[in-house]
Image 1 (spheres, rainbow, N blue to C red):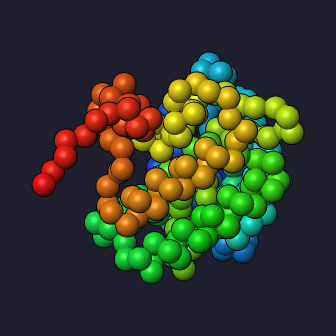
Image 2 (image 1 turned 180 degrees about the horizontal axis):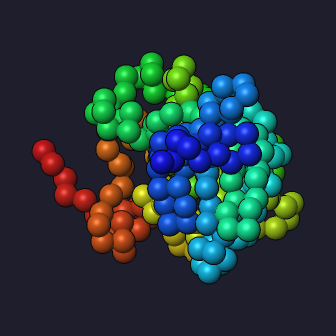
Amino acid sequence: MSSNIKIGPYMLLETLGEGSFGKVKRAVHSLTGHTVAIKIINKNKVVNQDMFARVKREIQYLKLLRHPHIIKLYEVISTPTSIYMVIEYAGGELFNYIVDNTRLSEDEARRFFQQIVCAIEYCHRHKIVHRDLKPENLLLDPSMNVKIADFGLSNIMTDGDFLKTSCGSPNYAAPEVISGKLYAGPEVDVWSCGVILYVMLCGRLPFDDEYIPLLFKKINGKLILDVFP
């Protein structure tokens, strides 16, 4: 049983989520009783799919960043087969909270948004752009405070240099990202924050379509919409 598996001083409990390269489990420190989340990354899958740089980047940036609204990385445990990232336990996603409540009140959305913007401004001051902001990557702790997670697509901003890589989820991506244009960095996070605010208040995406080229047209403002009386 998973409850009997121990990694370092941590006893692994139930699975919180699964992805292409591993899973996230809740765990408890056997001496202190402190609850954490452990991101378990299968090294073989990471190496085979050329994702090692992404994992390394996430670890590097989470070690650097210390902010009340950014998920904390406590330690990293490496074995021949896996990488274990011991991180702050924050419970559910903002995405699920929005779905459960259909949409949020202005007061609640404002509170969440202030926390998100505060954390992102801190990242930008430290020359880090997230590039994958969406409700699924915004966790809520037991006190209903936002914790920004998943820095795997983040990058360092260098003065005078521009980024071009298309990252993140299409629905939350800025026009310059989906168009393949050069961008400095902060502006793409600002755009994603605006989309998140819209989703919190309206309970739906401002730009959505199953057909990606049509979605991109909507984001770029090149789609003529029907006018309703």
